[in-house]
Image (tube, rainbow, N blue to C red; front, side):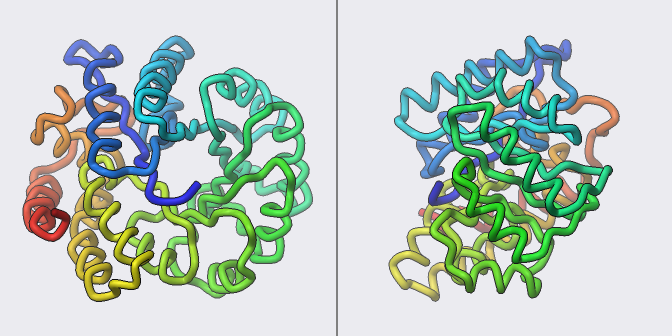
Length: 293
């Protein structure tokens, strides 16, 4: 649960099918360049837009690469309902080291309802859960007290925390020093979360810059604040460019330009990105490389 885990895109062929060769190449690229692990079937992977057979192909490909490298595979799961989430978790747990389970979205259940939701999913599978707290997407805000209660569940191994800021609840959560991993989920906030005691992060940007994230994590761990800050400052324009249009459109285009995947296609309703964000991301990536070496 420590370090930066790369949230993988799902590459497609020119005819719109899953491109497992590109996915395998991407997964190896991330791990060989220092990522602590892989995340499959997250939002970055366009998981809701894949068929069941395609989801299985993604998982089998990522599982094989993870076993080859001896690194963990975190798998996205969960919907707005508890029973469908349990079904999905059971289907994916056999190929996962942990399940990344989103806080129920849109319905905005009570805090106790959220806790019961995760307890029920955890009772149904044999791998740890990583609740995905992302209130600006789910519409459900959890207080630091509820987040700590969530982390206290036996079935929970850590949390992906995406507050969109270093807000008061984030500060309280980290100050409590829970004995389970707090992983930054907003790419731009990995460095401050690490400096405040977090364990690492789950980021889409690590698909493009795994070495930089690994170097930044190592610098924080070693107390080399100047190097860590320099890497953070260099990563920031890259993350801003990648998320300036709905993700993962820019990310896929730059990955294809770099030869990591073959085709930049995204599925509807996502749309190919404009040239400005792509050019900005490429320029930021070029500027980042000398620092990450």
